[in-house]
Amino acid sequence: FFKEDKFKTVPTAVFTMTLHKMQHRLLVGSSRALRVRHSALASGRNFNIAALKYSLPVQRITHPQIFTRCFTQSMLCFDLKSSDLHEQKIAADHTWRQHNHVWTEDEISEKLEQVDLKHKPQSISDHIMSSIMKTLYHSFNFITGYKQKDPTPKAIEWRLIVLESFAGVPGFLAAGFRHFYSLRSLKRDHGFIYTFLEEAENERMHLLVCMKMFDAGFFTKALVVTAQFTMTPFLMMVYVIKPQALHRFVGYLEETAVHTYSNVIKHVETPGTKLHAAWSDLKAPPMARTYWNLDEGASWATCLKHMLADECHHRDVNHAAADLDGQEVDNPFMAEHMRDFDAAAKRHMEKALRKAVEDKGLGSERVRKDSALH
Image 1 (tube, helix red, strand yellow):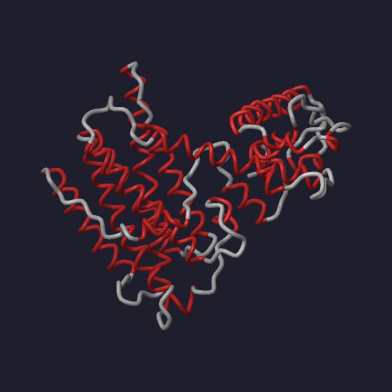
Image 2 (cartoon, helix red, strand yellow):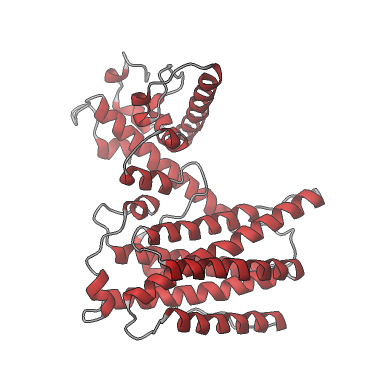
């Protein structure tokens, strides 16, 4: 019923199909679109570049085309010569990779109330990791010129770039080590690889969002390289000796990140401070709006609140991982990943359906958006 000659007579009921049925069509349609494209490239057949505006090859795809647009638009982005705005949206579109959680206003408020949550060291390794983190924290403050009372925008720029570039390392290391352990032990990972990869990807997206707002000079880049080359071997050694110690270290690291973001947000929203003067009127970059599904007019302060919520979640995940005994424990966060996938699929299906309605010229008398898509 999605064929060209029948689309205009589709009743409203078509748009109320169940979420799971729509997910199936979307995934299958995307897979077929990619196979058609790859087959054409291998055989030398030409593609109309103009037709790739919504990433649809010239050949007809048997499954509903409107459902393939969101997935294949991201998959084929390297074929498009597009604007920076489009590139930011593509880079932030995680439909086909690790799905980040899109925070609601209530969840943001809840996380803002939890910024003071701290883990009290219990074991010897906890105390060691806590001491190392405190040493790094105060050293980092000195190097970046960060002062908790009325910090300067420049100090925060350095801090966020270096912090996020380093925060993306531990999750990737943990996922890699668990991957190799699963291979050599011939056993399941119980879902943790995905959680830690999503954490690393989330931190990397924080960094990319910051780079859309700030410029990194030579000194900042030197700090990033130094932190990565010095701390990565240390973290690898810690994980080899005791994986739980690494996760405890990351938990403490995220506590400092939450503290930093909460302090920054407070000063951005407080008139008379340096951050308020510099950042209060800034808008969130398109990459951030796409990644967290923010409104078009979302502010930079709103973006910072979503980054704080992410850091709160990473804090809780790593402290929980540090408390688990052994490698063969089920991941308690898998249900969250499933819900995030369902939410992401629903958002993209709604966008695809709205776009299809607009393309086919169906007015409000034929399809009511509010009732059809919600």
